[in-house]
Image (cartoon, rainbow, N blue to C red; front, side, top):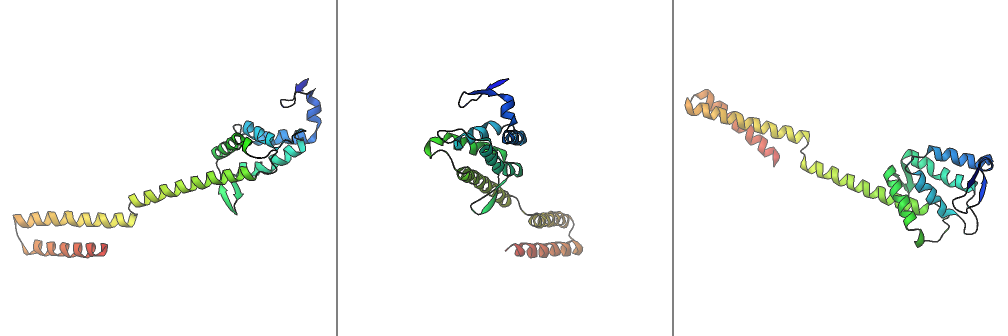
Length: 193
């Protein structure tokens, strides 16, 4: 069975291509990739093809081997620090590099530009997550603040209750209870200041 190279249109036997150990290693690496990334990665790898030659299986294997651990771990190292990178970031970054291929010199020599795009996307994602955490923190009282506010509300409810009882039947005991509640409220509200 013959197959045709999609880049150069040369026909060759499939068995000949698979007899190459580097070709088998590339096929194995492709099997480890998330299916949505495979077509984008293959198109991205074509940016490494020398102008008057094809991309060798060995070079293809090397390039994939450099990326696969980062894809699997969901983390890259760029700009001197690690970045958490989601599969959607990979898709977006690969597409971005492919779309901008006419703006830089080909063939590519390294994954540097791709890693820069990925770290930029990860940086934006981290900033958005931090913004959301900060907004939640500002709008949601801490459990300690919530407990404090709940205690003040309970004291106010008790004070209203005892004041109503005192208005209906004034007694010394109710008067002392109202004074104690007022003192506790004064202490609690002064703690807020």
